[in-house]
Image 1 (spheres, rainbow, N blue to C red):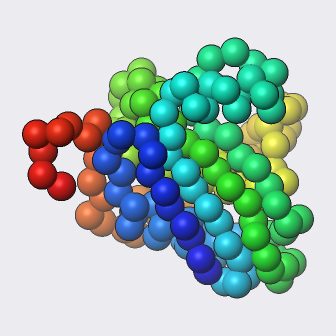
Image 2 (tube, rainbow, N blue to C red):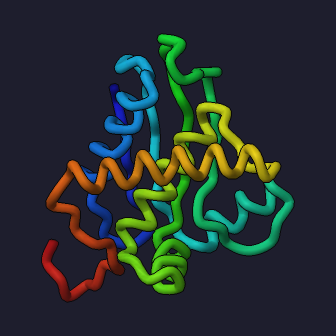
Length: 161
């Protein structure tokens, strides 16, 4: 499985943890290891433009998903799953509001985006319960199994990375 991560956000993100989480989700969902996924971390202005263009909604959002090939869980399909865009600044605000770390919010958004790429949605109460239950299961089992996750934060020019 190929996971391409690009960071244009100005925030530090744990790319290794994000790649491992995507692979974890793929294995649990029985997605072919030949599938490809692209994740872009971007700033609030850039994601706001796409949010308005594709969703018709004003302002920045936390995550956007752009599916490519129609890949479904357990079907053995292969190809390009799609692109996920995440805004760490929005994720950081949401994390503070819910009382957990920014990296945990970003991992949740990554899994949320993957589920959308696979055709899951939350546009009804029933679908929302199903999608969010699966999302929580994937996140919590990943966090339980995987250690060494570092929190995300703004990249400061006086910090040597």
